[in-house]
Length: 359
Image (cartoon, rainbow, N blue to C red; front, side):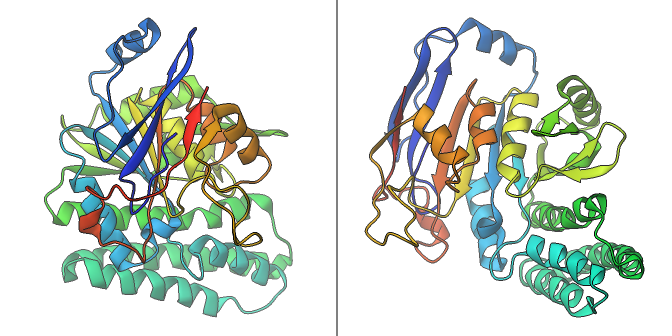
């Protein structure tokens, strides 16, 4: 795992070599080093794909407002050659879009008016779109958002009449935020001449909803993803909705709250990616919750098993499902400070704290 700061310039890359245990190293302000010998299992997996993918996941704080989108665009531009899979969360900030969507369902179930919540959601996206996109592109995106909000309004009217929150409705409605932020990111990247395609994860990601949580249907998901990829031109990167998925019956569902990290690790495996990078807005793994313990410090060393345990017991820096799913390939966790350095600093900053994971 890699922890860095200012949109991730100090990195620690975690490499897993099946049969030999985990090998990890720190790379400060430098490209990630290559392993001296490639494990046979990984070599065969990479050979099964005609493209070498790198996955980058951007959380809600990374796409919270217009300047955050621009910063993400700069990061993506800096990645150089290679095919990227970019996973986006819903717009964060205060308030978070996902929270507003869930609140609208709760409000409708009580029989109260939900119009103000939907209007707040629209204004948040319209303001951002008009700030970062050309007028025609912004108008096209706003038309999509208005259509979706109209559908949500119809759904909420039914919820209001029944005075009941159906879980499938919560799952459906709460996933719209990722659809909008991802399409906004696609429009922004295309406006700068980047070759990208939008992928609604619900088209390809199939899961079973078990008592223990969502379980990926790997074979079916891989088949559907291959079908989608076959229609893309060589060299096309994809921008993917995080958090959302479909059941085996094709019904819209989610990977539950904070599931976008899980999405990144899932698509990393499906695409046989050489690296997964999770971009977030903290310095690294801290010794305690800084909101409760102001003197909490970044841990200089942390074992992989300890990281999984911390995630399992609630640490927010990275989800336990993401960590567990990412142990078979290179995995990075970059950190950013939206109010810190400018987007131009992220490629060279080497002053940020980090956490070193060891086996």
